[in-house]
Image (tube, rainbow, N blue to C red; front, side, top):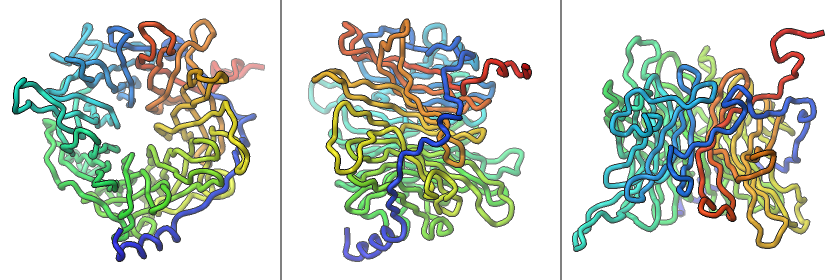
Length: 519
């Protein structure tokens, strides 16, 4: 950090970082309807998918998006050619049945029930975001780059990392592939994807140009810098750069110690113009990490109408913890665009440091960047849950349970966070137990359902599981995706994972669930 940047950074921390000694808030749980596996999706069962391959390999679902007909598409990582991971797409109907892709071409597999795309001279390491826009699917992925060695034996060798957008039609056809960022470091990934959003440049036009915006992180030395790019999307899905790689720096120095972007979404539009762009992630003040939200222009410049200089940071700062809180995923409910104000509602899923472990949390901001004081207990605009409930100063005991945030969705007045819950074994050296986690709260921050969902065969917990992506599915339900993983003692399949998708919905009163009131 430069001497000039230090005073600005210190001022920003004083103005924004908020210490919150929140209690675990369970009010409303008793009266709320718990979320259970929806019998209307795959007959109330988890849909496991190994892409018609061997369960001795790994298939890891990462993100999910809702299709126009009410079904869903799931993107993740599957085995590819020559042992390199590939991108795998699968789609399910609203009833939870696998659907055939209509035109996947050479990338269709098993009767076109799957799309598997092996990157030429590379591999797909991870899927970080999935956006459906009209009849196109935009996949944000981490890639591995290979190049041929200059000395014998002449063969492809790992040469670094990339951030890529892959565009498919909802029929499974590959439209385009675009590298957004890359590095030449085979040891450390320095180009890290966060999120993407796609929007029409003019919402009032019948046929408007379309833009794609990207937010991520670039590591330079040991410092993480937020990164932004914008592309124009052609009718043939070709991406034309509208900006270079831009490094937003709110306040002219607030991100000198470190900032990262882990999610990007759009909000309301002033008039019919370009929508407001929000990026969420984390901010380092030289000592600790806090949750961070930025509002950016279409050129990647911070907006001064948001928190004064485009950046708001929030720290739970719970006593006895490491004080490191991280923003993991972002959801935005666009406002009305009436008048000159901004009534967007901004939600960030976070990992929250607590004494003896990690909890999951949600913060809510107004469109001007201020905390929504009507959200959560204490009027602080935040809520955390799911981690060890051990007071600061007490000894940490085993077994303890941690909660981790992965994705967030908001619909129908419900805020839903998907993630995982990890519990230590009661036996020394025993296997860590991991289960999918869903927490559902009202838009005012009242917890209505918080549960772990263990995968079971014949009533017994039989695999580990984790939720990685979530999509609203209507009628207060949410479809989650992730993976199940075989136990360490499962023989040839030990430790290997499959896609896992299920729909969760509030438990209905059987007397009223048919829509007709009963006496």
